[in-house]
Image (cartoon, rainbow, N blue to C red):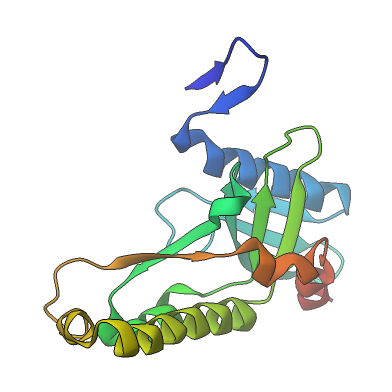
Length: 175
């Protein structure tokens, strides 16, 4: 549901944020003369498939969208016991992170898949290292494969700011 508050600010329902991001990114690719096809929400790892009609090459991309970038871009739910394997299985494509905190001027951060995986792995390992010092008992519990609750990991805006408008990370794959 899209709601407008009395102050004129648009409050975007959670289920719409992802769709807004997908369509904003698709329109950017169309403007660059590429074909951009949003996938159904059942396709794991890809939100859009982008094709270059000149080379007949295509690439799947993942889109993450938020209107509260200070909270990071939610990425994956992962348990500590197997985070490396899960990241390798879930990060299948370059990511386009879309900041829609100002709908009139969305910001795009285009990050290669290996860099997304590296950022996530470093953040999780850093968290594990801190827990070794502050709460080793809790860490031991969370490292068990049967630990019931995975943690939600985000990509922080500060980790991807250097990728702002880095469309070449995807368009180079289409040459």
